Image (tube, rainbow, N blue to C red; front, side, top):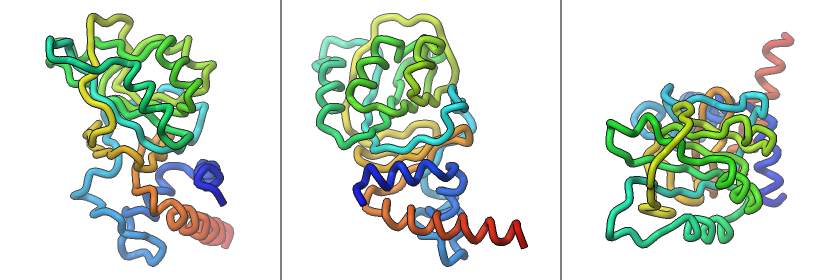
Length: 215
């Protein structure tokens, strides 16, 4: 089974079910105990909103970038982000850390329709960011999941600061290549080399849950 096949099967389960076998119940024999459930930064907090809950579950490989205000020393652009996206395994979820001053952080409509359309053409299935975005209605038919703090209609000049470096977004620490699973409950991550084990255990866990409910 290819990683893409496993990711597709993983989308049969909601994100809480994934967290259950990743780390949430360390005393459960089906829990892989990949992280300390409280101390490690492996899932998002309450600050993010799922913008398209009707899309249900989404899973993919993490690509990361950081955006902030332009400076004379900037050398990166969205073309560099696009180059990284083309080189990464598919499908992918782009994790954008917004690094703006507090006085404008709440009104950065960062990733709009044009940017999202370009990302979709390169295999994007989701975006997670610790700030707002815009063009919510325009993006909806593209069927790309967004998890944001909210929406904001405009923005000013901004620049790419980093690409494919570890980032912390909404309480979740993400490295390039991590597996991310997301739905209306939030998002969680785990190392790509645990994909087969997570899928195997969540399938068993789900069957046992159904048996308990039907008993």
